[in-house]
Image (cartoon, rainbow, N blue to C red; front, side):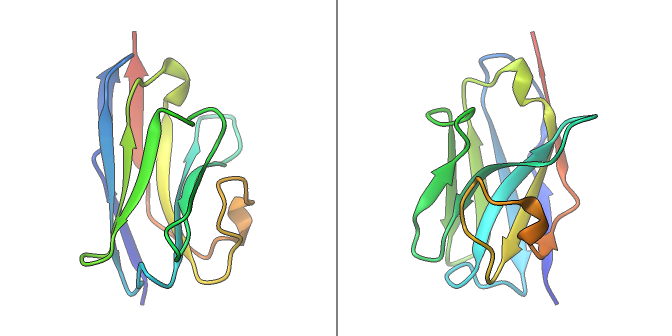
Length: 125
């Protein structure tokens, strides 16, 4: 069975940094597409960043240059390093994985099979 467990969320001030982690089991990071999505109240879930099985990464335009996605192949852990956080980054962040989904940040969240429960990120001024 596949399990994804996010951690690292919390409250930070604008301009601050935060690192999210996703501990994966039942998923081999080297063969699965993995990514981060976020959803704010009243808004649709949107892709933030994704990393393919070949290590290539993509980012939403809104976070490009500020967020970095990475995988630790030895521990099957996905990370999202967030810097220069803005108020607009406030959302619940979800870790996702899929064997066959188009592995880009712009892909539809419906295409992704496995999901964590999410971790809340709140950015304040």
